[in-house]
Image 1: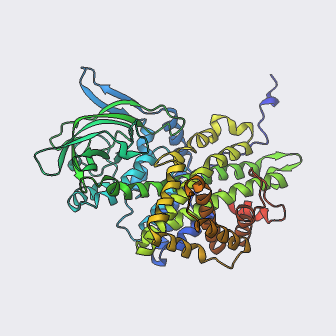
Image 2: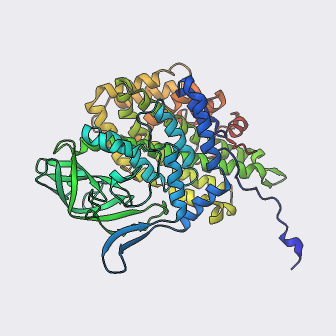
Image 3: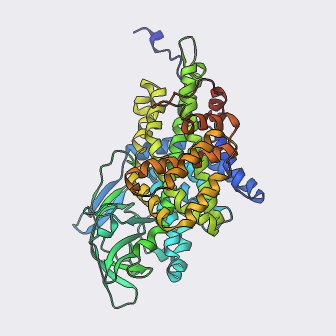
Length: 545
């Protein structure tokens, strides 16, 4: 075979050796916008350090290894003793350890903690998405535990530690812990009030024995879990430690690991409780109210995680088109490809901008911002996670056949894309949650309208969309059947309002023309040709040294 046939030309180099944070203009601007000036220098430094790690060849290889070597369940040891352990590839532990050391589980008591943590989570999730599940749940467990000051005093320092302490031991003997969650059961799914797991009170106050089956228990290798079970007064939240204080294993029989579409590096399991020791969190019968703050925080992470995946998919697509030549020139300069790339970039920037605004509301903590989050989180969770899968598929197509092969990394992004739309309540659950807030919490709607109203008068298409949304909101009769339509409109109006206020004019103009003004087709790449698409694509391009 002639050696000339092996000469490689017209291929994009790997997108490696770059700062994932600093090359993302929308994210950098979001951090600068929402952090106090005194915090900016240290935040930029820590996020660029994490960004350079995420963009390194070594960490990218960790992501590949963690997914090519998924976790393995060991139910028994060689002697037949039940151990119920999950073995992970070392790359998984390296990824998780880096996330913990970077403060991605320690936002709650740190100045600007949620903005800094959201930006870090968005950066680091681009290296590999699966390990983000225990990172998210560990972070989100804090507000639920704070309903019990004694439990919070005991567990919060462990949860927010910057030390990843691998291995199953009593939590009191560890420098840091990881948390999981078990709510859904096979007969109810998202309808957690249908749970049949029973909680029997023990002699020691606040302690119970649980019996039941959890259909989905995330991150079963964790040190502790928040679970729901039926106590005498109704559905109640409990803390289940994996190892008891005397060093013995709690009853935690892992029946199997789920064989999932994506998220392959992460272990999702079915777990059997049979007299499992637990501590009550909050009052009996108040389980949903106790755990709802954890759910809200993990829902925000679904938005951030989807924004991360979108950003990585867009970065790969723009990078490829910048180097690849076809039909007499660079792909990125071809009007039709530029339209596709710009459309993808708009979706990505809108998701990032919204995610950072929600994180800033958590940092504020005031009544107005809490009311805003009550509507904005489920609306954002509904819409941003829904947009992730078609975006990932279109970005993969930008690479053509190169994108369809596993080595490109794009198939892993595509398989991961549907996860966040399903986890923590699928689309219908989010839509119904928005309806509940509209019907029961008038302060939430007022806060939402005040937020979008800050951009009123700046763009006629946004103004028209706000008017249409208000018309929809004025009639809640029979609203359930059109809830998705309403929630989609609310999310788009909120994104449009943020972009009109904060994004460059070419980005805001293109978003409002397409998403709000109706000048858009049913697929990506159908933006109005008269827009400044080159500037939109240039803004989205990752910058490599």
